[in-house]
Length: 76
Image (cartoon, rainbow, N blue to C red; front, top):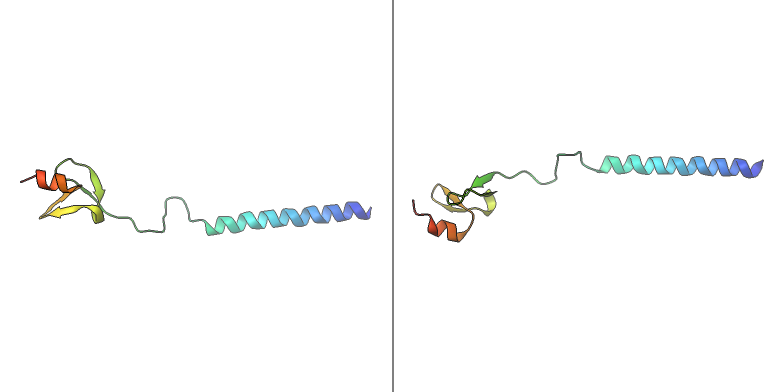
């Protein structure tokens, strides 16, 4: 009888540990659709129309370009 009681107690403790670990892992993950970095505005290349992040765009006046070749090729 004592051996069965010890096995049942060990199983309950193990189950509580597993459930607590899952609960803790769920708390540390960010919800879907959110990211740790802020979203960046996308701009359209005036030459080919590809959208690129604003920080990577090359500017020439009011126009944005995806590469130096497109900036140089597009002369408004």
